[in-house]
Length: 180
Image (cartoon, rainbow, N blue to C red; front, side, top):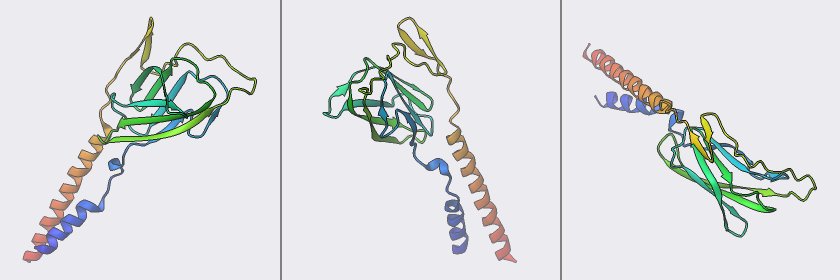
């Protein structure tokens, strides 16, 4: 009987789904360490899983002063921040906090620099970049939220049920085998 419990225990932990991994920053514009040579009006952070709408980020300069954002929008895997005004030259730090698809709060940061002194100063767009599922109504940006089914949770649920079924099948097989 002890062998059955050990077998069931090993079967349950033999398959570690990648769904249990935490959400991570997949890409950003600007990206970590980048030197921006044009005026910047929008920051975009893209994560590897859907993030909660309560996720946010703060932009600070190298002396720790907060840089005001006009708006921060969360849309599925993307978090988009529109700047109130173009950034001055210098180093900036993006401190982000999210609640990922797995429900865990995660925070991290990255930095980039602005150096527009190269003589190639492009004028920053006064209009924010609109992503898919976003529309502009006058001075406001409205996010058309289409709730996605939490596929990672569905996968985890199906995997757990399959593992339980395999464990039960193995247990019955071992019990039947032991009675002969």
